[in-house]
Image (cartoon, protein in one colour):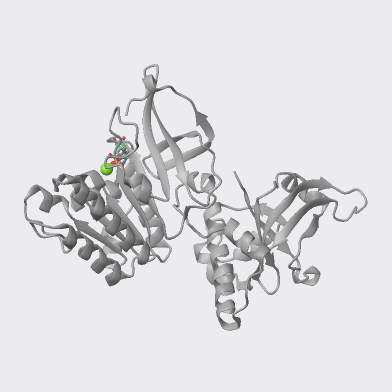
Length: 403
Ligand SMILES: Nc1ncnc2c1ncn2[C@@H]1O[C@H](COP(=O)(O)OP(=O)(O)O)[C@@H](O)[C@H]1O
Ligand SMILES: [Mg+2]
């Protein structure tokens, strides 16, 4: 699992980075941190006085002690990416490791320290965004090596779920569709809500297409965790589309709903409308099997799923579709197509150990991500929602799987 580091450089000592590799050294007192830096970790550089993030680097050579350089004996080797500096101040409100927002600069007084994956992702996105802007003007062609590095650190949509972003190198790859699968009660809907709300709170409006649950139930469940959906709905940052009432043939009081009897075209059109209306960047479809129940013909459902997915991708959204495992079925989804459209699949399970039940999450597939194919324990915390425990790898056999 890669780690994410912030390196703070004194303005007086700062030299603009070279585009080739470089060995960087740290003073003796930072030795314990530097020893934890491994190959493929990523580093953002911050420069004091000008208060700017100036660099993005990948570690290409792990820790080494150089006794010939007593001032900076703790060494690592890095490759720098071509980025443009970003002022730190406007980003401070969004960075969770900066807990003192007033005297925020106190958080930039260590030479090197680990920061959460989602904070890293925020700054990284800015550094790369500016780079793209610059390139557009100059039409500068990428050299092969820079391009390769860029591919290695694709942009991420943080889930905001503690532990999960660490496993996923910062989040889902942006502009992709992720399938979350698992039995009833596994925690799929809660995961979706967390992902959507993290986006909404960080400038990415969201749409929740609710097939199973009535919007009011969803709002109540969320509020139990302290997440106020109504507030964001009123601010126009979040839309819940009610498909649950129409599916059961009852009238809905919701502002956003599908009228009965609805067709595939109507669903696709509705999704398109709401995405455009609020400029959504994150979309949830919960759940896909519910979507299919209404249609007799499985081939028709498959075509609809493809169309929906194309729509989500062309709108630049990062989306989650939820599905269920059918016991005894080899695949992880119901229609056998979800796996093929999804750029990532996460399986959520409940298993038994003696008399106790526990939860586990496995990333089965995630493009552009170097993840560990292991079951990780997770819990549903009454305050924080889902919390993944990246250091708790669990093992169980099929007989112990409950759902
Ligand atoms: N406020 C809460 N505090 C703690 N756990 C909760 C809370 N609300 C729901 N849960 C847990 O989450 C489970 C439901 O999760 P959900 O995301 O709705 O499952 P799924 O969508 O996979 O069917 C419940 O069975 C319960 O164990
Ligand atoms: Mg659910």
